[in-house]
Length: 332
Image 1 (cartoon, helix red, strand yellow):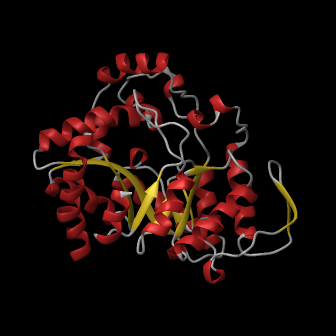
Image 2 (cartoon, helix red, strand yellow; image 1 turned 180 degrees about the horizontal axis):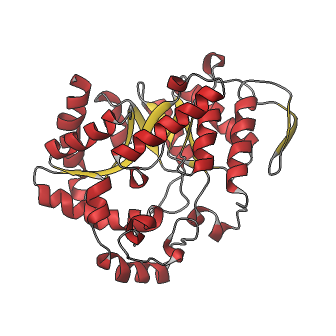
């Protein structure tokens, strides 16, 4: 809650919380409910947008998700953003959650949620989800549906973003500034073909970073954490270097438990760091400003920043990021 209040009074535009059943770490798997956290943030903050980064289309019905979105939107005075994607193995496989046809599920979930948050007596029959004469009330604040930002990286989900999304929220692990710009143009082209205003889709980016007055300190933090991020979500970056990775580590199949923790402890230190240096932003404040500016020039208008730091150094890192990096972009 302390971090939420800090963000609210220090000029941040939004505050996001991950929707995971387990934490993404080789050793610590703690993870609170995103919906409980966002509800608390809704009543304790006044300015920031509140977002899920991101929920999936597998663990609840469209009706339940619609009711949650409506509730947090009302509690926050219309500040909720629904971030959503296809889902990940660590949040579904151990818990018996069915997540077949993930792209179809995502499309149907978004279509039903949109209808339930803006219409009454909704009937929709899909392959994975259906509703019959369903309604969710009260409606969101001012009758305006919360925006839906899609965490899309594949050709199919990026096309979906152009047709259905209010925002695009991919991971920087998947995109250099150049490839981000190309992806954004594709999404805007799809939107235009669909008769939508391409500029109405918010170009966002989910990006991991580390900051310190000492470059090597930030580099070490980023390399240690970044190897796991790429192993889970961007194994193709290692494969491009000729370093193969076991598919059981990848996000679709990964299950965190003690045997997996032992395997990760053996594998992670051996992975190359080159992808981390190419795709992620870290270092001194000037290094970070330069890295974020490259993505901003490629079209990013909203950064969802995950700040890595040792627990004892987190407040100091957040303050440094706020006073140097955020202040630079707010002042420019």
